[in-house]
Length: 627
Image 1 (cartoon, one colour):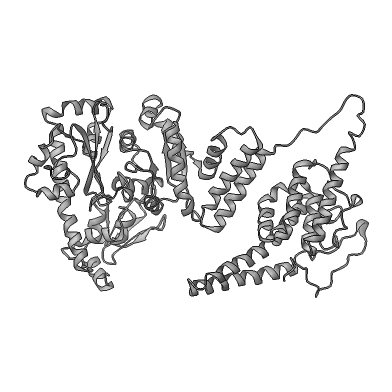
Image 2 (cartoon, one colour):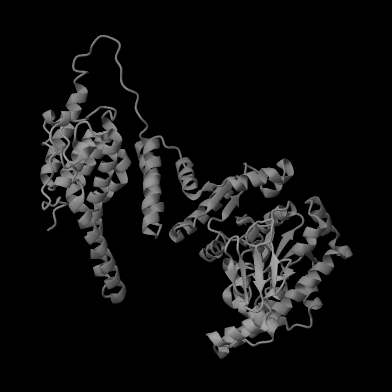
């Protein structure tokens, strides 16, 4: 563990302005330095660097920090990587936590020497006579000379021993450990990369840690792309290609683009879009998503428009859902069918690509569209399957508020899709005996079921009022489908009532003033003076808003009680966490009881200016009956 004293010594030994000057042009301003802020776009300098005090500050965007913060925020390094790089500059040795860790660090440092030497050799080969075919391929892709140099293209000759011979200064075991040679049983190790266009893969500090190789001509049984295996230097699930370049670029654009492969990254860079990264042969991992969210709140995932690209998008979404946090999400760009980023830029230009990146679809809409279009929805069973898949996605979300919001939004989209408004039935021919009475008979049947459900489950004024309110405003039932479903889950005695209400929303004409009247046998509602949504003459908008609040209150109490019970059950495994969670939930329950006490205390406005009366101040509004 690094002590504060050691870190202070490191800051004192490194001149802040000299570090910042490597990527940002500074101008002397008295005892300070100034520049246009590298963290946001501006025309006049508001970014200052003070070496004496050891911090930088932007008066425009508020960016502030010391030399270590600069390395993590502007360069995109992990804290320990930043410390190690600065310590090397300052001639300081980072305290080693234990001998094993020190040995591993020394081993990795030696392997970096191997990969850096291999990179130099690959580049030499590209510009030798044997690299002519690789150079021709790069020209056919339209890559500029600057991009070719920046990304370090090289060539591995078609030989099993060429690299081993060229790097003879390193022990053969190190070449195997660095992933450059393959060792199989008792056979002599041989070169992993042969007759391939080579690309170095860097870590966040810009060190070569692995390689990717692309074949120049398609051959049966030969993989088009080949990456280094995982090594002590390289973990493909924790590495994003081009992060060391895209990180600083994203500070300027406020954006991070994720494409499917490293050739897509280079195609974008060749067109001037420099804030792009790519995973390395796998779907985005949790670690890679965490890295992206450290830099931007909503990375933009850009996938090919074919079926494979769509599947890749869904794999990324599946990984992201459990990790969603307030303010952290994903944007999704789907390219036109059959085009990758390079194709799109060649055919339609950089502007077309920028337009897509500027208006990505959000994660929720992408999820809904994919599941809706995943299969034909011809039968009720098909539609029920769609609903089940949507709910399964929401259940994967760990954050409770985000989970509830996703569930509500997706179920609303599902309801609008599965239950579109039905055209009003009209009959222009001769009257059919009994046809006009059908709606009344249907309503009467539902009324009977509601009457039975109320007598068995809705034993509180608030529950009864909510049922009457939803019957009075049946168009609101679908709006509260999710909340009513939760109520049925937490209060099983209300399940039949909820089921009947949902059936009502699907079978009755929601445009009617009232779907079921008291005359049809529904018990009389609670005191209308207490609940505005039950009073005649209440503004419909106000009535629906108060009804929504009543539904929320009705659902929240049993949900809180269930959460308290769950927290209590965890006591044996996590006593401290269980008690803390119980206390937090009981505070919410107490606040809810207070809201219930005051909810519905509306002044009773009688029709035609009758006298206004007030409810007794000491009579609380009852909530769901507690046992």
